[in-house]
Image (cartoon, rainbow, N blue to C red):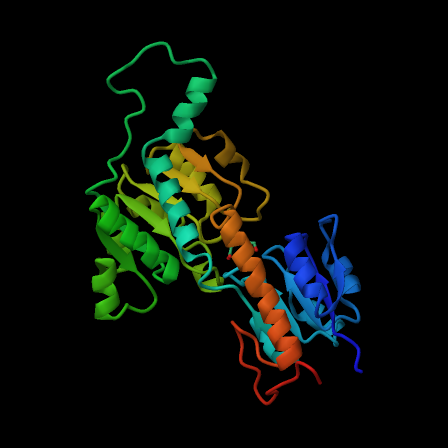
Length: 333
Ligand code: 8YV
C-alpha cells in the first residue's frame, strides 16, 4: 500500500476539519497558531504534498522553489492575493480558493459596516461609553441617509452583487457600479444596478463600497485624487483588501472632512493599522471579520479540505484557481 500524502495545516482551524483531513492524510498542524515567518513556513512544508493556508500565508516563488514536493495549496479564503499565481503555474502546483460559500455572509457584513458608518454607530457608542451623553440634541450624531440614497459599488463579483441586491430591494437605494467588465443585462436587472464609469461612481455615490480583488492594478484604486472626487457627505466602505485604499490619504481626507466617514474591515499591512486611522473619530474599524460567522467559516474550511482531498486522492480539485497545463493528474503520482 502506498504511503498517505502528507499535508501541512498552516494555521489553527476547526477540530472537525483537522479530524476529517486526518482520515486521508498524515497531518502536521500549527496547533498553537504560531505566526510562522517565511523561513519557518518553508521548513515546515518540507516533505509535504499539500498545504492548507489562510490569507496570512504568502506562497510565492521562493516558497514553491524550496518545496519541490508540494502539489497543492488550498486557501481558506476566496481572495488569493497571498498566492503568486505565475509561480504556481511555473512549478505546476495546484492552487485552490473558497468561492461562493462566503458571499452572503460577507455581503451582510458590508451592509452592516455601511449602516454603522453612515449612522455613526461606533462613534456615538464611544461617546456614550465615555459618559459624555448629558442630554438630547437635535443634531447629535446626525448621519447620512441610507434608504433612497445612491449606493456605489466598485467590483461587481458575487459579493458586490449581493450588496447591490440588499441595497436595491432592502433599502430602496439607487445602485450604480463599476467593474472591469460590465455585467450582462439580466444580471444587471436582477441586481437593479446600473453600470457607470469609475469617475461617475466616485462623483455620484452617497455610499461607496469596495469589493474588488487586490492586484497590482487595484493598488491604491482609492487614493487622494479619488477621495477628492467624492461628495463631502459620502461614506466609504472597504471589505475587499488592504492596499486598495491608500490608508494614509484616507485618514487625511477623513480628518479634513473631504468625505464624511469610512468603514474599514481590511488594512494595508494588517494586522497593523495606520496610526492616523486610530485617532480620527469618523471611521469604523473592524479586524477583517466580514466572513466571520460560525457557519461560513466552517463552510470555508470544509471547502479547503474538500479541495485537498479531491486533488490528492483523485487528481482534480473542486474549486481550482489555475489549470495545470500538461499535468492532468498529479494528485496521486
Ligand atoms: C478570510 C477573506 O477570513 O475570503 C477572503 O478572501 O478575506 C476572508 O474571508 C481571510 O482571508 C482568511 O483566510
